[in-house]
Length: 232
Image (cartoon, rainbow, N blue to C red):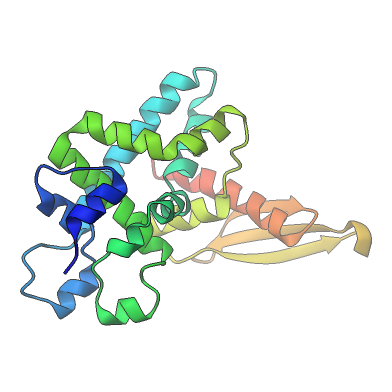
């Protein structure tokens, strides 16, 4: 039996309605094996938390960085709310310890899976909003993202465009991007690689770099910008 009072003490968050907290940690695999469980999965809370997170981060960036353009703000926001960042925050909070998982998901490492951690983080934000309102949810979000926001202020945010592209492609229900080296020129000690990224057989971006990784990142950046603009 999960001790939700211990969970609240560990998180430093105390819910008026504890069922919101519990639901934030219910993975769909748990319900598959426990169909009579009283609460639904955390997926609807995740949907709500994602929207609240995006709004709060957008507002914070808008207020704190008046010198940045719309495109720059969009890129930084995407880096702050991406699965990779959320999973890091969730891991630091040990959210995986509280997940309710089916046996298969448990055995396959579900407590440490990036997607499960990021989803739990978003669901927890949604639960906080429903239980305590926007102000408390905002406090929590900004407290957890403080290290990343400070990096932004110091100009140290380097967006992982391959991750951002992957998430955007998933959101648009497209096939995963593939990368191919189309050219490698220069001597071994000073090669230059040209890489194209394809999505559903369409070339959406091209990048050049001194190694394959750098070229892929540049290609992903180009594709991310193009796909983002084409989908509004």
